[in-house]
Length: 304
Image 1 (cartoon, rainbow, N blue to C red):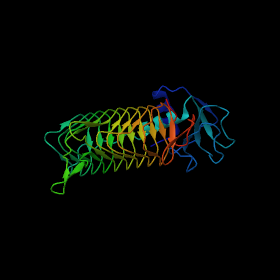
Image 2: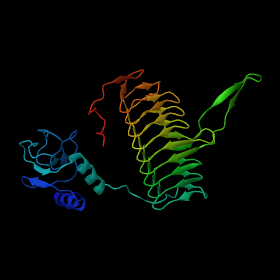
Image 3: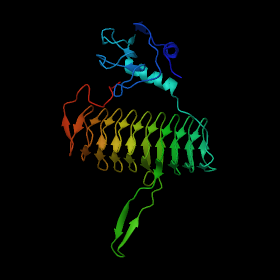
Image 4: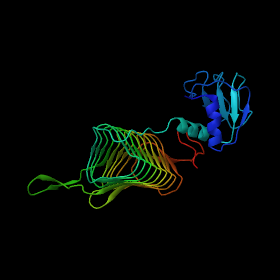
């Protein structure tokens, strides 16, 4: 249940200073400005949309309001506060290990681990507070840190393909893939993501606080450094290195062994065939080309 009194109570619990303008409105839940309904809680940075009515709106300036019958909660960081409030009301549910899940006897399992229906966890190490969705497969030689989410149907530690022709026999000789995957703390991995293990004795590494969205494919020996966001349906070929605090737009594609500097922004659909050495650069297009970096790009969260 969500109501206005609980919202104020949570703000106090979160040690967030605020003031209220107008009469308090009864609310029934959270609202998105892309689907506006009455009696919801919204946030707005700048002018409040005229279509929001009879609701509560979190704003950062008492002048950023419309003339509708709304109640305004004025505080410093509306979007951050809205996200924190939603997290309070919608925590990740932990139902333990499902009866249909298959857990190897050699798994090192941390505390408060959720494993949903039909997931398979082979010889690996799983940290504390890890959520493993339905039909996920975690192969051997995978190390997962704390507070990690792996959404439905993803595969961690899949075998990649490396091969060479035997010119004498005409046989295609495929090299076994026997390496590792290392996933840090506070990592989110969406649904239908594949992360390939390292080729020989190397590791594929997803560093702390990374986000990998749905449908992305991560090749063998890739390293994604901390606080980087990989959007949906991206493809990273083998041994790509992505710097820290990067944002990779949807459906971007990287050739093998590419290196990307810290704080790089890659536009949606870009094809990256050469390394990017300049920190903080922005690249778009096919093949990708540099454009002037902007303070605010559509769909890209503001840098910390």
